Length: 111
Image (cartoon, rainbow, N blue to C red; front, side):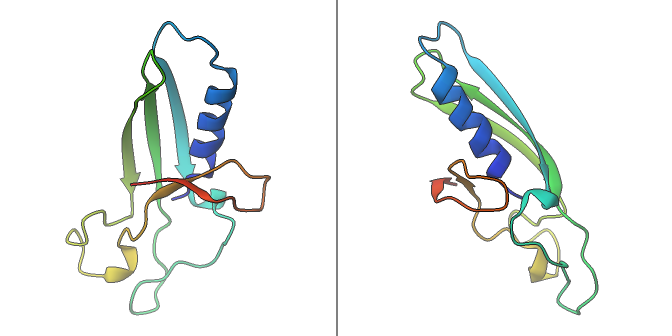
């Protein structure tokens, strides 16, 4: 799961939002191919692991001081207790600042 698309959408929102008088809603489709470091995902036994994917919705409040998010992901063990294999555990969820395709920018928001 990558946050590159999230950060691009959020960066664009802050750039073009101006004086908002209403909530702004963003959505993002999350796919493994958004990762700049590609590779075959494996289980702890070396077998191929399903790629993660999901959908995210963000709501920026009227004052542009708070951002709520709702994210649904598949093929990632969010709590570390959902599957026996530790190779699908969520380790460091975060959103990067915008970056050109194929490169990474710094982490803007960790959660």
